[in-house]
Image (cartoon, rainbow, N blue to C red; front, side):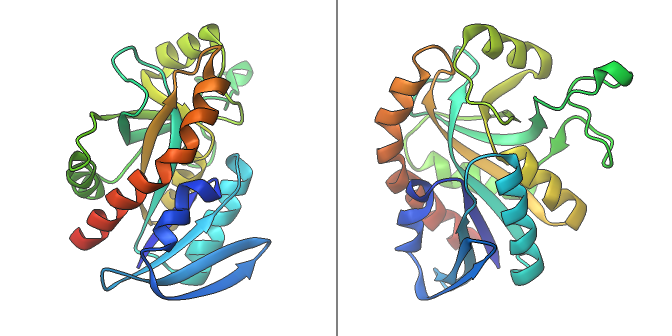
Amino acid sequence: MVGIIGAMSVEIENIKHLMINIKTESIAHINFYYGKINNTECVIAVSGVGKVNAAICTQIMISKFSPDLILNVGVAGALKDDIKIGDIVISDYVVQHDMDTCAVGDEKGFISGINMIKIPCSKKLNEKIIASASKTNKHVHVGTIATGDQFIASKEKLLDIRNTFDASACEMEAASISQVCYVNGTEFTALRIISDNANHDSHIDYNKFKSIIGKEISQIINHFVSLI
C-alpha cells in the first residue's frame, strides 16, 4: 500500500479523483481516504499544517493502514538561486531547521532519540518519483528539504537555513513525517513544487500559486503509482 500525505486539501484533492472504490475513515479529526490507483492500494490524507499535525497523521496512517511507503507532497519555498517557482524538489535528506538544543552542546538540527540531523530518504522511491516528475517537463532538483513550524518570509532566515543545512527548499511537514517513518521502518520521501522564494514576497507568490499545483501533483502521483 502507498501512503500519501499533504498538509492542505488543495495538495491532494486531485489525487482523490484518481482513486476507485474509495472509502473514508475519520480518526482524530483526520479523514483517511483509501482505495486503488492504477490497481495499487493507496491511502491519502490531509494532515493539516505544521510538524505536530503531520506527525499525528503519519503515525495513525502507519498504525491503521500499514503502508509500505509514505510520500509527502505539497508546496515549498526555494532556498537556492537556481530553483525557481514551478520547479520540483525531491528530498534526498530532510532536516528540522527549528530543532535547536545547541545550548546543551548539540549541533543545530540534532534530533534526540534518533540522534541525527539529516534523515535520509529512500533512494529506491526517489528513482521512481524522479522519473515520474521528469515527465512534467518541469525542472527537477534533488536536495535537502528543511522543515520547521515557521512560514519563511525573510531573506535573513532563508540564508540562515540554507547555509546551516545546505538546504534546497523549506516547508512545514516533511521532516516530521520522515522522523515518524524512520522509527517505524517505513520508506519515505517528499516531493515539493516550489510556490515562492521564501522572501518578503512569499505570501504573494504562495497564494497565487497554491491553487494550481493540485493537478501537477496528481499527474506525478498517477505515474509514480504505476511504477510501484
